[in-house]
Image (cartoon, rainbow, N blue to C red):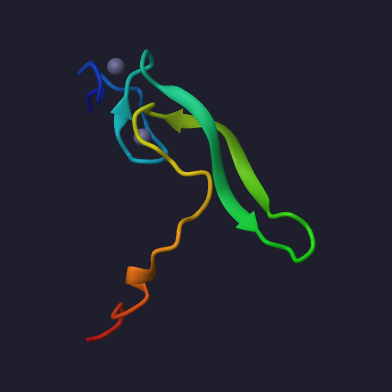
Length: 76
Ligand SMILES: [Zn+2]
Ligand SMILES: [Zn+2]
């Protein structure tokens, strides 16, 4: 596997988008595993710190709504 940015041998895979990146171009950022919404408190998240990140994809800080997936998902 080659680095997405420079074409050198990659040493890791971006946790967010799956691009391969070498040590030179890899970045680290926290990765949110799960988010809890518990009533009165603010939402809490279980976060893994310093997962591999390619630096070019754009993970969003919170889940987004995808209404178009709601309809017709299971019609055979
Ligand atoms: Zn590279
Ligand atoms: Zn990425």
